[in-house]
Length: 66
Image (cartoon, rainbow, N blue to C red):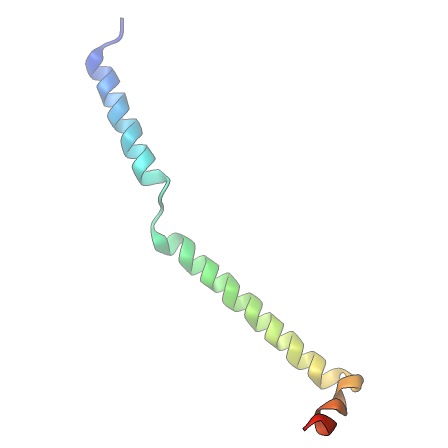
């Protein structure tokens, strides 16, 4: 036979776990996401700059368009 106080204890533990473990602190998700976003943006801008500098087809197009 189940002890009623033991069931209540497990119910309380399960509720506490459900409320605290599924919602992490906001910075545990936001800061790594922000770091990944800034890194990807920096590599994209660096790649665009290198392409604009080294691509011979794009060298003359900037002077005639202005």
